[in-house]
Image: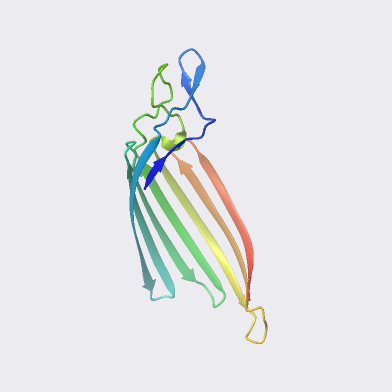
Length: 168
């Protein structure tokens, strides 16, 4: 894909010597390339293994690799479990800096454009309660999940999920 225009967050700033700051100054165009592959394998004990890989590169110098694995397992006729792990590695853009010289352009200090590695480990339980063919409500579904995400730049996030659905 090709992007043109204002490509950054206009409120981001970059530190300068002497405790000063300047606005980020990003190129006005970006050419991005991505390729991905997925696979799924049925497991004979009523489970499935799924995998995913994505390669990304752009003309700003960022190169990234993402790999994910998921294990799905049916525990009973109405209860399923999923465990997942995702790894992401990226090189960062050529002009990322935590301290820019005055007049340096382009410049960015957005941590999402920096070099880092990220990991995510999670799990989810899904309960599906069938309601029968005579009811207009065919299924009730309840899900609960948790994911822990961390990056080598110190960012850590815990995500909890609780949701319900009605299938008509």
